Amino acid sequence: MSELVIKGGHIIDPQTGWDKPGSLYILDGRVKGLYPKNAKIPASTRAQTLDARDCWVVPGLLDMHVHLREPGREDEETIRNGGQTALMGGFSAVVCMPNTNPRIDNQEVVRFVRLQAEKTKCRVYPAGAITKGMKGEEITEMWDMVDAGVIAFTEDGNASLPSGILRNGMDYAKMTGRPILSHCEDASLIKGGLMNEGWISSKLGIPGWPRIAEEISIQRDIMLSEYLDARCTSNTFRRREAWRSSRQPRSAEPRSPARSRRTT
Ligand SMILES: [Zn+2]
Image 1 (cartoon, rainbow, N blue to C red):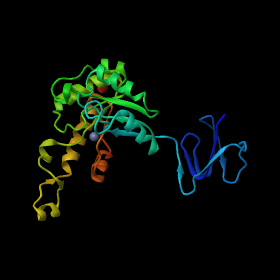
Image 2 (cartoon, rainbow, N blue to C red; image 1 turned 60 degrees about the vertical axis):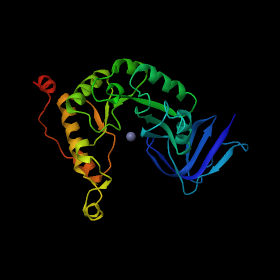
Image 3 (cartoon, rainbow, N blue to C red; image 1 turned 120 degrees about the vertical axis):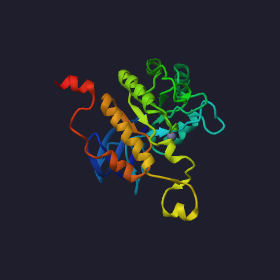
Image 4 (cartoon, protein in one colour; image 1 turned 45 degrees about the vertical axis):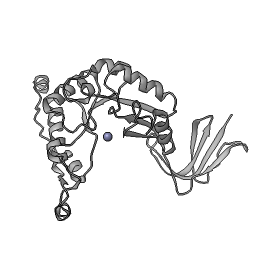
């Protein structure tokens, strides 16, 4: 029997609504109870105590956007190593992007990732590529990849996915019940950009990266997802303005022919 008491931290537990200082009693790796500050905890004298003063105590976090370099660049990072690093930072689950080498664009690679993920206690959820080889041309075998375990589709790192290809990808992803994680950058606007576009980039003579490159892409993806009634979220919010523009109230009118049919 192993007992752990985490004391003195500020506990946040969305499930019970707990958002105040307290103590956590863990028995054999499972949370047994939350207790207010100074309350008596039913732990034995052998229990290990962890002082969490000035810390938040929260459930394991999920990082929706990580790059584990395996397969292909195990010299930089392996899935096991990336998973262990995530755990050390408080993240008990990660979604890994498919721009590895080879790409996560077929069920064999998905199975390989999941197999390697068994070497870490961090839950590793692979996202599959929208197009084969992430070349922006041919849609991947999405159903096969879903069967193998992908939880979403994305072309992360590929800022030049044509609207027609993304539309098809969104349509197929919708059929599988998986969302699209959208890489929101218009490649034609960011070409050569090395820093945020503004008076400083002009003064320094360094090619700028305009914020509309992100906003245009976000708006396009929102319009496509509304048109198809498909699930899509941005994978790459970089600027506050882009986030704000994505939150603008949208038209109440259905744009999708499919939706129109359903509502009449
Ligand atoms: Zn990325």
